Image (cartoon, rainbow, N blue to C red; front, top):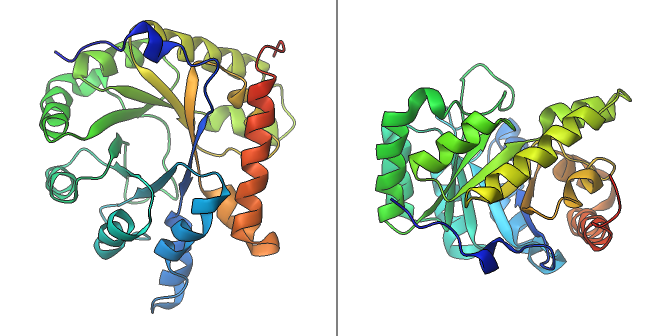
Length: 263
């Protein structure tokens, strides 16, 4: 059984929020034509000086964007810790242990989906995931689970041996972006972040965040890391990747500095 985080490790309110940039869709653009441009490793190097703490990449079963060679180069050449998003399969277990990224985030995966749909059902796969997470953790890799903001899945993640959860904020972002009432979903996320930290898990968040929607999540003191990809890569077409990431970093830091403001 892993040890719970210490109280000092759980006291995040004064700490700078980590920002992970997902470079998957740089690879998507490259793969649309073939060849080597644009290079996701170059993208990682560009954002290194823009306040980014982590590079995130999802190595999918069908290799639709990030390729095995990309993962190797990101770990060796990006200059930043790499967070590998992956399905809980034997193939990915072997790859993660062989490449030894800084962290792994276990996500559900369907070949036909355009992007990850919903969180991982940790509670429904407990015996399998417990063994799976144990094997990765024993190699020195930090393991998170990508889950819906649900108390059952949070508890299951802890019992399975994860050291962190990443909350799926996609529903909140969709409601926010369409002008619908997102306050209920934001409250749900806020409670989930407290639940996670309360039982000794680190709490991250991601999926669909934009300049406009990110402050609501960044204000949550229990959330220590955000992983953002599609919006940043898409927006960079217009203003450049470094500028986009710098702006996102500034928005997050401003929200974080005002985290005591009632949401």
